[in-house]
Length: 206
Image 1 (spheres, rainbow, N blue to C red):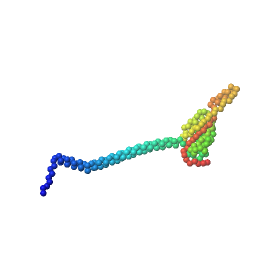
Image 2 (tube, helix red, strand yellow):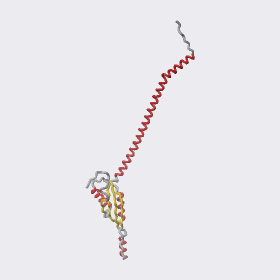
Image 3 (tube, one colour):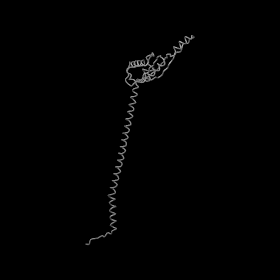
Image 4 (cartoon, rainbow, N blue to C red):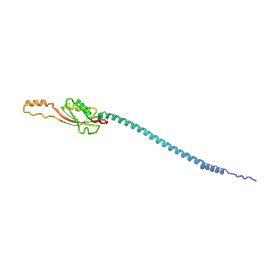
């Protein structure tokens, strides 16, 4: 029995090789390249997500620093405000007594009369209103006002009125001279409404 012998030309060999390569690419190489591309895309997306997360974390860190700085500024502001407030009102009568003593020390020669002001007791638990009456020379009154304005804790002047006595009339030139000498630096009556604010605290009664 004779064997069949096929002779393949050079061109046919090239076609066979090309066909084999195409089959290999179609069945093996292309799916592998596609899978590799998909994996690479997944890695890129994961990298983008991590980058975005890192940016968010950095933003949070920056926000935390800003918040910390704002809190420090707020604490400093509260410390400054706390210095302007009187201690909490534990007993209104004792608080009024202490204020009367303080005001008399500020104006010892003005004959001060201090009383509870409008809605003093029934107002807020962190506020007291008082009325101050007195009489004195204008420079002494100005000095008293300056001491109140610069005192810490803060004493607020809500309103103020002043009145000067009218000079007495007389037909005698001697009497006029005497009146002029007496009224050269006359004493003036004044009335001041003041207000103080206190730190919050439990309110005692008396």
